Length: 197
Image (cartoon, rainbow, N blue to C red; front, side, top):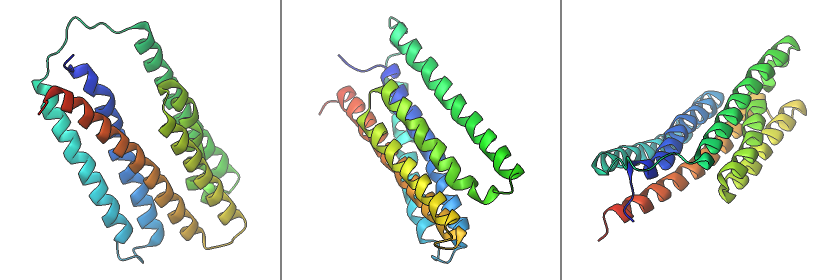
């Protein structure tokens, strides 16, 4: 059966989020490095973001050519999944705000970035269950580990805090890159069904 616009919603939504979050983590890393890497990290992830952006535009153009599939109604499973996603995403945002407030009040604000990585990593575990995605479990474990390593490096003063934050930023940007590549592959598979050779 040929795909409809609804089929592209998931990869496009995921790709949009990965564009935003890859850019954010790359900026965090580059600011922490104070451009001592001559912008190599920022340049690499800029290319990644542009690659994702090109695919997002391509998917959007294809989406406009696909039928709206007005017969398709949202299933209870779709509604449940959307609701769970919003709950998880909202809880993640609230946890980040609480963490920021607690760390500032305890004069531990320098632990904020690795704490955010830890929260982001943990939030991927329930998402993996909601979307039944093995890659989400891998991203969850990786990002959680990156957050823990960042916290340990800063607390134990193993390396300068900025270097630890740069490691966290790069590690998280790699995780969002992997997730973005998954969305690109999924989107290309769907539009391949739309335009068979």
